[in-house]
Amino acid sequence: MNQELFESVDKYISDLFGYEDEVLKGAIKSMEEANIPAISVSANQGKFLQLIARMNGAKRILELGTLGGYSTIWLGRALPYDGYLLTLELEQAHADVALQNIIKAGLDEVIEIKVGPALELLPQLVAGGEEPFDFIFIDADKQPYAEYFEWALKLSKPGTVIIADNVIREGLVLDDNCTDERVIGVKRFNKALAENKRVSATIFQTIGTKEHDGMAIAVVNS
Image (tube, rainbow, N blue to C red; front, side):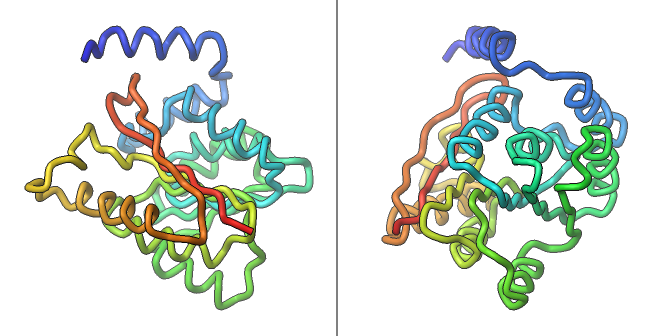
């Protein structure tokens, strides 16, 4: 593969369609300054998520993995004025940075951050009778992706779109001898997704500034 070519094409697409305004650029800069890992979605991926949420007419969005709020802002901008986005983040320090970026984006009225382990917060949402979400984006630690997916289904309704990032891991999902827990986690998720009859789903490869990976996309069946 020619990584330089892929990155150049990614930039070409971003220049045309994935414009980052000062808020989005500032979010990236704030993460660098706070030493938050540079693992946010790319601009093209952010625009893709935003478009899918808009196409789905999403009024309620759930995000697993806030980081510095970069993807959160892309998704928040897909919401109508009376929409709601709940984002779950493990690290308080990351959530603090994300909140400032969300405020700068003028989205603090429609976005809420909950801090803690997602596998603790998700059951609380279900037990508390949280309304179903229209769009769910999973981009957190990879080992429990299958469990995240099961909880996402409990917070879904027919027509809900569920997208999970980083499910190809530079092709390592093909290596049966790989001992990387992240790879093992997404392989378990991919298998569970393929076998689940409640959704219609597929995976598409992504190649660009984020190198070789993939996103899973599912729609909850009626």
